Amino acid sequence: MDAPSPDAPALAGNAALAARDLKHVWHPCTQMHDHESIPLVPIVRGEGAWLFDADGRRYLDGVSSWWTNIFGHANPRLAAALTDQAQRLEHVIFAGFTHEPAIELAEELVRIAPPGLERVFYADIGSAAVEVALKMSFHYWLNKGHGQKTRFIALTGSYHGETLGALSVSDVALYRKTYAPLLLTPILAPSPDAYEGEAGETPSQVAARRLGELRVLLERHAHETCAVIVEPLVQCAGGMRMYHPNYLAGLRRLCNEFDVHFIADEIAVGFGRTGTLFACEQAAVAPDFMCLSKGLTGGTLPLAAVLTTEAVYAAFYAEYNAGKAFLHSHSYTGNPLVCRVALETLAIFRDEPVLERNRVLAEHLAKRLAPLRDHPHVADVRQTGMIAAVELVADKRTRKPWPATERRGMRVYLHGLQNEALLRPLGNVVYFMPPYVVTTQDIDHLVDVAIAGIERAVA
Image (cartoon, rainbow, N blue to C red; front, side, top):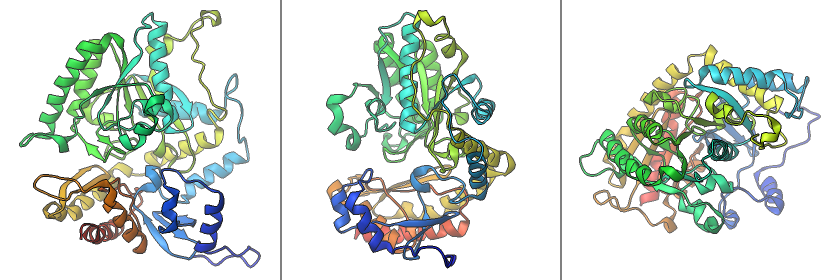
């Protein structure tokens, strides 16, 4: 680590910072009682794919800090853009006012998005983007005289966020069960998850069968359905479930046929994570709404965007007294700082061979993980671009899972912390979602630590 300035105050160590934190801070997605025995890790610095704690230990960020950081911590280009913008304009109300970073970002998003997505609505986080898309779809149908359309179709195992609207179209019991009395009830379509396929089925055959089941649902419910919402190609928080692009192509056709919207939640899978800039590209489809966040700012600051069509926009465009305006907002809509950083993030994609480099890294990751397919407690090793997952099971033949209460994945996590790696499994699914700045040596380190952690977890 760099030596501190003689005038800089001495940083407290891990134990002191953790004690201060636990006195007041309530952390997300955490049972705080765990920290009586599981260490809280105070991070003081980041550099590239690595994080450094207050005691000088380092950790390879194998999960891109919750899937956000694509170009490395303390990226100098993103930091410079943020600094420059902060000296010009930090924020301004976005109702009745505008500014160049928001304008330029919208232009650039439309340029790179699937064809037909011409309008950009800004939000702050991924869950909010999903809320915007849900409300906008419902409101579109209302403005068009179809107020009976009030429901949404989502996939089993789906996750779209944890605000109430986003949670309403999610199907991960861990997040949804407690709040069920507060939520809308979605119509659930069977996921095209290839792991759940029947014996001998290919991923494309699973997709075709699930499309047939979706057709049956639409025949029954299209009259009351606003939209079908999916995470294209990878259902991330649901266990990194992956499916064939043919499902997206078939979904687009069904939405056209039954006159319902197609919402693509690309919050986690967008910006190169699946091998193409957007996952929808792999099926050559354009949704009616595309939700973006996470990698949009390279993991620097929160920003989300909903892209939609000119036809959707036109349904709200009327004289004020018609009452058709989309009255959704938050105080930091279109914040200049985050828009400027997002522009620089997109500039890196233009200036550097990011996707080509990712393909090389993804191939190396696949090669290193391949031996795990023969492990007696691994039921599946799957990968889509720069997302890979290893499914741990108690019985390989029957795919019987370990009981959740045994927290086998937690053992992998703790082993990682002891060996310079941040791995945060989803239950018993050990996954890899590193920043794009990792080297093949970094990938070797992550996989070696994970394999050793898996051996400890299944012992």
